[in-house]
Image (tube, rainbow, N blue to C red; front, side, top):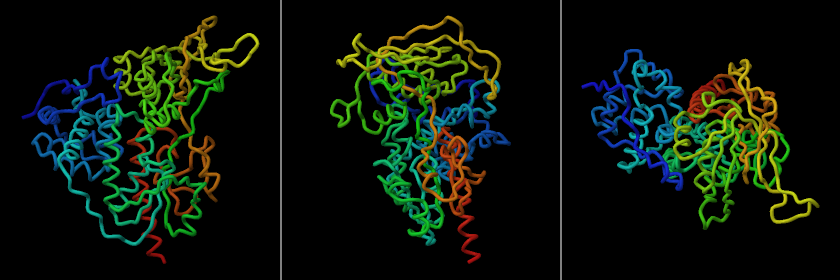
Length: 474
């Protein structure tokens, strides 16, 4: 029987003033009973608009129908036909702008909680199944994948299932890319990422960590000397942006990349960490995207009073509504329509070195108001006259976006790039260099996990077509 409730089953969560002091997962997940009840809200529409809203085209009504019947393993099998990272996608995808944004139930109420159901199915499978994936017969062709983030993992998974011998080259000492170093434990537990990567290794994918392509080995060497017939670049966008305002080189100023990497990858918040991080008292996070929310919520868990400084209003925040809501619940203060002009530091009259000299003591800001729309269609923030003020902080985190590291383009012959640094690639991931494909943030700039995964899947299909065509013509 259909459940015609206009609202979703709420997601159980930790109490805000408990969770803002720990790094345990905020959302606790559905019970089987809650999942079945929520799945019964799906109308199994004829035209299936939710599938069109999914970048990897998961068969959403089909898997939800199995959840409604309590067939959780069959639901997992259906999801796995389209994605290799269901436990990840169910947690971090912006479903409200994709599958759930297209859901018919959302017209007169709340959409079906597709993301929560995907998460439930993946977690149920991981908790109740020990069977490993079967490695398919090899076809004898070698493909290299650069980067073990969402794009690289997705591409490698699809190619491995086709029988390719796939090697992933990862610069850091752990595989997972942004899933490991960027997204905090309280949103995406790292055990889940490791479990998903183990499944990839079961398919025969080899992962070489501590390998910086462009330094340790070049793409040209991989193809000319190591025998790889194709290469997929999924190296992401890890080069942080700054505002170039006075004081950005003071002690206590971080890029969000560095701050989150130290927290997530190196566990610097733990007292026995090999690389402990300083626990600030007052923090300003500059930016309004998901990365800014992650940085702010991590800083809060270090015990700080935290301000999010954003030059537009609350309605214009690009972060997921759920992340903003969680941040507000946890006590983070939003200073919107505010723009930094200078980061202030401690200096004595003689400018002599002392314990605090050269460290952050505040951030000078101006108030903003929204004017006419800019090229993106959003109203342009305009500075108010005589509105300068200072926020007392001892740490500033810049969360202003990222661009691709230029190392790969600078060390690869015939690889064209865009003016801002992204690799030039067509809709199928083909680059200007024969046999080299690219996708995800390395092409688009910083975007979402699921869009990167979609790019990886598309490129995998194009690589398969390319190698088959080349073999047939030889």
